[in-house]
Image (cartoon, rainbow, N blue to C red; front, top):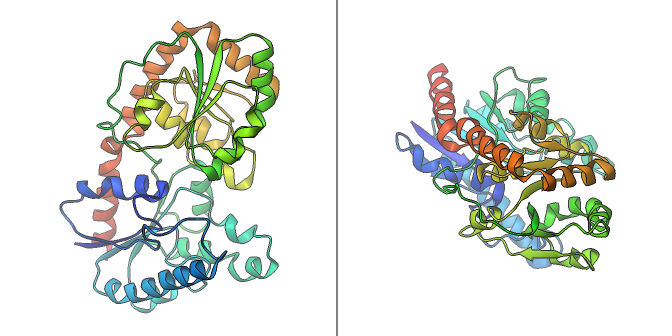
Length: 354
């Protein structure tokens, strides 16, 4: 079988790295080619904010148009989100040449269109993603919210959460620290979610809790908002992220309750759990589902967050055991080793239908 992957990014992009690239070497039975929309020169800040950025993005669209010639010779196409962002008629070419494709979502990108502030984009593209889903042979989703949306237009939906490689998260012994370390991992784009906890951290400091906040990949431009707090930023590095996460006493995932965030996969929690760490998070759909043992904590309000931190800090032995259970949950449900056969079965069953 000739299988073509069309991720949005190279391995530099987290969504593409975890949803596509980390699985590729498990697909040795197939003839595989990968064509990311953006290459390694892409940075989110460039896009249409400069002449150079405009020409670069135009080149990416042109290159993907050329990829259509390759698609005609494929047996199955794997799309991340859509074939070309912000353009209509993404399914026209596939229907015209009877090309079979699978589409994968780990974010509610349909809200980029139906909730876009520009009225023209909303009018033109509000139904774009639903049409991509409708004509897909199989739809793969990463969270319950995305699954619910996809099933409105296609009944052949398989939910596979964004997963980790157990070989990389090969850690069982977390270092012991006299401080209670509150940890977070993310990117510049998601850093704003942590701002809602500033008053919580200030209250913990007023209660003389011996803690520090350690954030991996946090936007340094927001660092000043945490002044007078024991706040530390660790630069993200693929080689050290597991080691850094393992230093946490608790991993947190606060999220604003927005339509887009409801579609988020609980990947931060999965990373913490893979390192044997308990978690506290906002109770959105994917976060609730990943808490299969019902022992991790959830918080919405300021008081709920404060009480959750205090409870976890006062009961280290109990929550260390919860961390061990978290690791087992990841091994069974949220690792590429446990999910690889789901992908292979999808490829096999979809190809056999042709």
